[in-house]
Image 1 (tube, rainbow, N blue to C red):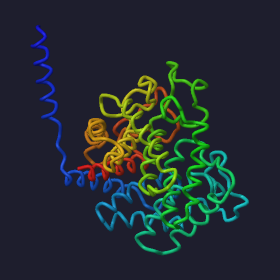
Image 2: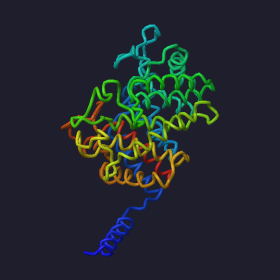
Image 3: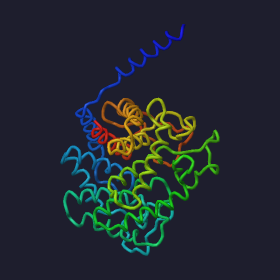
Image 4: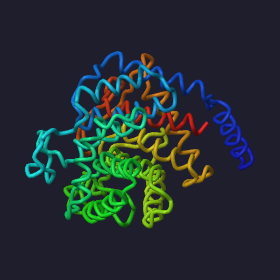
Length: 372
């Protein structure tokens, strides 16, 4: 076969691919949001604890409300917040507050997994200015902002859990101390888990290369971990004033991470659980992919990332989310269960769902609506 014939066939294949790609309308995206969120809320009670996994869902649900103004969806978050008395961990005595290791007890008030709920409480306060909604957030986050230590965030997930709380607290109070503390805490986080070569984050200090490697000897970047970071940075930039002295530093960090993430996308549109070693835990995974899709969409929508460079990445990610992850009944599948790394041999499938995975999907869907 001659060269012209080969190029002609390739051109035809490209045309067929472009023509066959689904062209979404804004209304179709809304329909997907209703389907996914309706399925979740119909099958899961709102009255659950305010720990990170449930709270991550509500960060997505609040974006849905802002877009659709659906009162039923709003009340689902209000019921959750009221069930938890507008608090995270409930210990009253600051002398007993903990954060330096993992803990689910009510004394882990300064642990980020108990602070992400404040994102939703503050959002709900913006809708109805009832001081009870933010009283605990002001108490806990004010204490942290005023403290002398900066080692609160020692795992990548915390950058989604708490960074946006800091910028929301700034918007709530007008006090720059929250932005300064955000910067100080992030510097500490960077010192223990940021890979300077790539701009990607190891999940925590246990996974830093070369102390930890994949089975094949490669750097092991966990997709959901870096998904938390990219999505968290997008949320931070959304609320951080451009006049803040450190804002360009955050922009540079965000854009570098976005490019590092985009380079590691699989042909199927998803990111594997170990981002640089697809064989460590092969196959699609939704939560990391959805957070990446949201983070990249936000950057394009707000002018921090260029359409030409990132639109193809977004298109493939959205195709995966809607054609593979999303099931006919509205379930979001292929979500890796709660964990902290890519686990060889761990299987995820169409029935693998989780609250935080739905939250991530909703974030991406709302931002894709804005994209269109």
